[in-house]
Length: 267
Image (cartoon, rainbow, N blue to C red):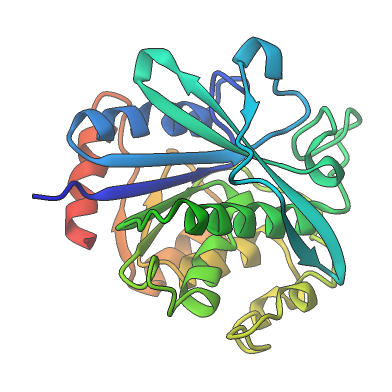
């Protein structure tokens, strides 16, 4: 029997970033699922604070070299990879000098959110999916962690829906308490128009607040997981009203098995 394939797309993964609930789950869930007989691939951004020498990152030349056009500007896509030896797993990094070489993640040292976070989310989501196409690796499940991955469900359902690699893929979105305070760039939704994506598809982003960005991801996912005990109340209400297949918060001792079993309900 062929192994089921799970693609993990995360905003943050430890040990490359400090430990948070999201970074820990994104580190140990893929390992646990792999040990339970699944095949995995894991992606995160290559932020400037990720130490390349200490973590032994190296560029994957055969996957790099593509340009992604965002807001009529070309942005080179660089792919790097590192191994977590104890877990026998690799982590792929989406890299670009304009978007990810700064030392901070989402906010600057003064706590101000970066004005181009909207384009960083676009680049990250498209960069991952274009790289998976280059890998010719068809995931059964795409599991997204953090709002920076929130466009993946939209792209899978609307832009890549007829791509042979993704036509059978189911998308799960894990919601965390990673709220941002200020709305993203007001031109965010205009930058999302591509073949298959209409104004109606992104109407909720007229005001790209954290709630609206997250709700758009929920609406385009096949299932939703509550990744932490407490999430935004408006988002939680939207999830319940959506009727999507839902897994409530799972404690540290049991979440790997619970998530693994939840996958079987979706595939």
